[in-house]
Structure formats: structure tokens, C-alpha cells
Amino acid sequence: MSSFSERLRLMQTERKTLKKNVAAAVGITYRHYIRYENGDAEPTLGVLVALANFYCVSLDWLAGLSDTRGRQP
Image (cartoon, helix red, strand yellow):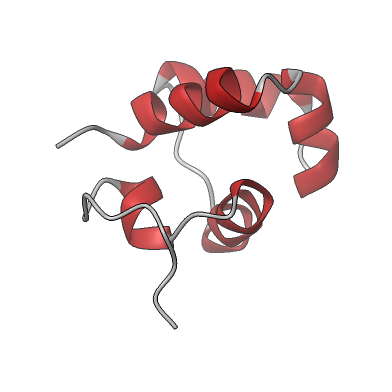
């Protein structure tokens, strides 16, 4: 299974979003976002939820706990 940082990079690349725009949308600094992508830091639960909502994926998938991207109803 992929790690959080790998999946975060994957979503940013697939969606072709600028890292600074993702960071602003979820309420973190660009520097924090880069640290998450590089695996140098782990986000708080609130930031994880915001990232999952931004990318429209499940928390389990983003955290690397599931291979199912979509949210469960």
C-alpha cells in the first residue's frame, strides 16, 4: 500500500493543482504542504480531513489504509 505522502503527491499531480493553491484551500502554509508531500511531517486530523475533502477521497485511502479512493456513503 502507498503512504500518505505518495498519495498526496499522486492527487496533486493527477488534479494538476498548484501546491500553493492546495495549501491555501486547506488552510496550511505552502511549506507545511511540501513537508507533508516529502514525508517530513504528518498533518493533524483537521488537515487530513480538509485534504480528503479537497481531493474528494476517503480518509482511509489518503492515509494508506485502503485501496478504495472513493468515500463510502
